[in-house]
Length: 321
Image (cartoon, rainbow, N blue to C red; front, side):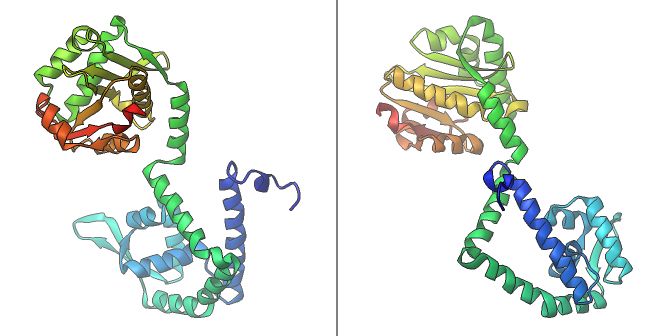
């Protein structure tokens, strides 16, 4: 269609275009079912198949699997119950929970749908997609998996936050934030060790005096994250004391701090960059791996004794590039 704004903006307006395509499929699917004598909506057909596949399932589980609201699930179930397709029973230990299953008539009707309609619809859809059919459905699955990890809304907020985050140099007036952000992060899973207390209470002596650097993330006028490059006696630098306020995690502020620290280390021409962490910090470890840090037993043997909680050591081999 000429001048189709959805076609002109395939990524920006992807949701609207998929909605338009979905509406076309669902409208015709309803007409097909009615034409064949089945007075069911496509959404009820999906639920009929899902309930049969599960054998017995609760309303909550059905909503979770199909990713529909419970009111929408309940409305469809009421219509299916009126048609004699489903039955329910209360769970003995909790009468509020109802388990849904198909009646014999529901099982019979499902068989008729599969035999008389769904098989042909499956063929038509595959024909429409052609050779791209497997890639098309796999891509939809991948998109859903990625959105499960982080929603569309959260991705937008994260991008917006990153644009709004400013990385600045440490100043004594931010000593309180430097201490409290890291104390919160460490305290979530571990105890503050003596080395933590010394560094956090004396950042000038412990980090800055020997040529180290403390970077701070500023967001909406407030300090919300920290990261430091601390010089070791042998000249190597440890990336340490990275933390972000708990309520702001997920906005990739830590990622921006890590990138800034790596760039600063390269500008300083540090001979070696490493970090120490703990296996519990899976998200942080994944982030470090993403940006080029590699696990190193050598680093663990050489520096791991500094912290009792340290059981993961990582090196940054790209520091000279």
